[in-house]
Structure formats: C-alpha cells, structure tokens
Length: 462
View 1: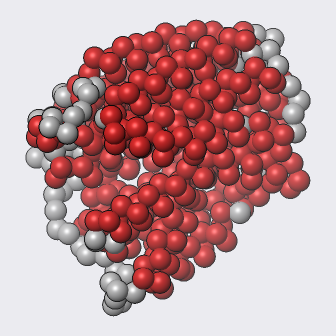
View 2 (view 1 turned 90 degrees about the vertical axis):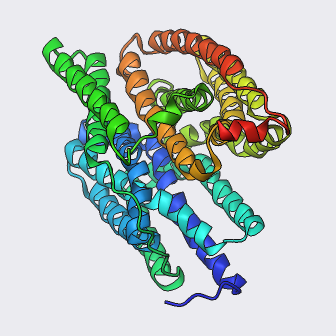
C-alpha cells in the first residue's frame, strides 16, 4: 500500500482509526465495573471471581505491553494492530457468550492480550504517519485526549446498557466496533516499516507474567479465606518468578525491563507513584460500584452517573497538569496530586451514604488528574532521549500493574458487599491507603528534583 505524506485528510483518518482502537481498549477497563453486580447475580459469581474479571484483563495488558512494542518493530505495527483487533473482537464475543465466570475470565484474559497488542501499535502508527514534530505532538495530544474520554464514557455507557439490556451487551457492543475498526485499519492505515532490532527477553517476560498473576492470586485468595497452603504456594511462586524475571532483566543482552533505569530514583519514584495512583483509583472504583449498587441499592445507570466525579477531573485536569509541568517541572504537580489523593482517601473515612462518597470520588479524581501527566513527564525527563519510548512503556506498564494490585487488595480487604463489615472494611482501607500516600508525598519531594531550563539537559543525560 502506498501512502502520500501530504494527504492531510488521509492522515486524519488514520489518526481517527488509531484513536478508536485505543479507546476500545481503555473503555473495557472501566465499562465492566458497573456490570459487576449483574454478572455476579446472573453467573452466581463471588467477589473473588469478579476481581479476576477485572484483573485478568489488566494483568494480560501489564505483562505484555512492553513486549508488544518490540514485536511491532519486528513485524510492523499495522500488522500487529490488525492482529490485536482480531483477538480483541473474538475475545469480546467470548465474553458476551460466557456461560459461567470461568469462561468469562478466560475470555477477558484474551481481551487483555489483544489490548496489549493494540495499545503500543496505535501510538507507533501515529508517530510514523506524523513524522514532523509539531504535527506529531498535536496528533499524540489528540490520542491522549481520546484515551481520557474512555474513563467517564465507560461507567456511563455500561450503566445504561446493564440497566436496560443486561450485562452481556457491555461486551457485545465491542464486536461490531472492533470489526469496523479492523476494516478501517486494513484499508486506510499504511503499512509501517519493519525495524530489525533486538530479540525479546522471553524468559524474563514469561517469569514476570507468571509472578504478577501469582501475586494477585495470593492476595485475592487470602482476602477470601483460602487455605494457608494455597496462599503460601501462590506467594512462593510469585516470589520465585519475579526474582527470576529481574535476574533475567539484569543479565539479558536485551532485557524486557530497563533495570539500569530503575536504579535511578528520579525514574523509579514516578513509576512507584503511578502504581499507587492506579491502585487507589481502580481499587476505589471497584468497591465503590459494588457499594453503590449492592449496599445503597442504586440502579446501574445511577451508579454510572455517580462515578463521573471520579472520572471527569482526570479529563479536565490532565492539560492543567501538563501546563504546570511544562512551566515548573513535574515535582509540584506530582506533589499536589499526592496531597489531593491523600485528602480524597481520608474522605472515604466519612462514607456512610451517597454524599460523602461523591465528595471522596471528586477529590480523588482531582488527584489523579494532576498526577497522570506529571508522572509520565517525570519518568521521561529522567530518561536519556533515545530511550523515551521505553520510558513511556514502563510508565504504562506500572499503571496497569497498579490497577491489578488495587482491585486485588481493595476487593480482598472489603470482602462481600452483602457482609455487615463491608463499610468498616472500606474505612480500614482508607486508613492504610492514607499512610501510603503520606509516604508517596515524602519520596516525591525527596527524589523528584526541581527542573530548571539549565538543569534539564543534565537530567536527561544522567
């Protein structure tokens, strides 16, 4: 396929198609939360199974995101995007037809693999199609804005679908959309260059995925009163696998994880904050939607609307955080985000009805909005320019790991929403999470250095 770089209309169509693909992937992170009570009722699924419905998807993305970018360089990102669409669509069909929670979880894992293939491919195609720096920045800004819109769209659309049609259309809707996006990719997106490059660290990557899944399994099992042998074996597998993964990353010629960068506190700390941010945000979203529907008796549509105070500030404040970071460096925005998130978590201590929960959602959303752009900027500024793509890949992976951990921990501690101690367990989570965010604020002030115009190049070279 030939492609004219001067065809602005054609490039605009390519951008729209890639944004649509990325929107579908991120939509499926949040749209399913409002459907969880309906899934539990229809499939007789306990909270542990609901956690895996969310985490199976996220673990697959987190484990394969870094590798997918390298595979795309070898095979071509257009080709990988088409494979991602095909797998995502088939897995969505499997989710919609799932007869029980086991099949649903398996289909969600396949969805996550498709999503992992799509996410880096959509960005890489945009970078290829918009090689000029100014246009590329605008195109990536559009890509990021569309991704932010998936956060409020998920709960809203999910609430309407579940209330009027049941939970299965939450997955059915992705099937025709994926087919349309795949067809558009095939006919509109140009073939991307194949870049011969480094080999994958298959051993380290496999150990990382196994270790992450085992760790999540141990947390979920412990929270739902599994036997000590089951939890102990899972924890042991997690420790051994993650240890093997990091050893492989240290020794491999082309490691899946940049261990040398992780030794830099300026690089490590923003990624720790990213893990904590997504862990808190998605953990609260998970238990909050259960509380709204199973405890307060809200309809799915009302629950979807109630989640908007958590999601909208992320969209509104992301560009504000970008301007603050451009002017003052990332430390002020990250510190302000940590402080806002801490206040939002403390507001969860007052939750005993709808009003205070919405207040907590709003403040937490403000914290996430300030943090999202700033932690990525801090990560990139602590990275040599020639490795900036790897830096953003690590940041995205850190956030997906945080999502998986947050759903596992919050769901395990909170327990069944019908149990009498559910609300008191949410208060306990608020206390523990507040302590963690105090620590995050402290290490942010210590490790993320203020960036001046004169110091920035030196920072990038370290």
